[in-house]
Image 1: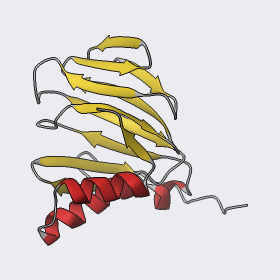
Image 2 (image 1 turned 135 degrees about the vertical axis):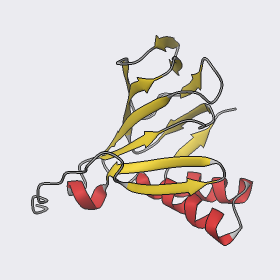
Image 3 (image 1 turned 120 degrees about the vertical axis):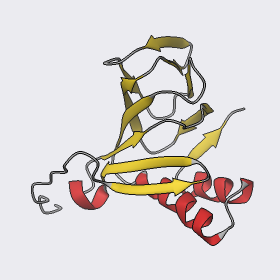
Image 4 (image 1 turned 180 degrees about the vertical axis):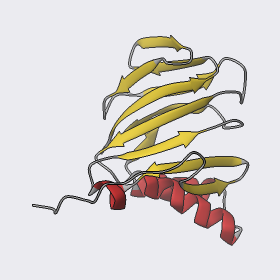
Length: 149
């Protein structure tokens, strides 16, 4: 049994800021801070839409902070505004787009923890000057993401 992690709190604007391309993801809780229970990150403007894909290892939730979003999960499509929430079970294809391209913010969670590593790999590739399709493919393979488009 894994020991219980200590209490963890962040002030507004705090978190692990990961940048790749023109995308910024702020990790609010990670495997390290939650004892492996879950990962929480914030996706903000100007993040791109996420094409249809599935996760082999994590369930996800999206909580809309700003903007209008459309989330597809399996055969269902959800139109969500601020305060909207959707659960995306692992193994079920899903996609996300912003109604106004590149405008809006989401708070997302994955369980179990560890998915923050996907964003870290992309940020490391960007810092090394190697961000591109090969880096995305490597991160996707390592973190069990299958792209369907």
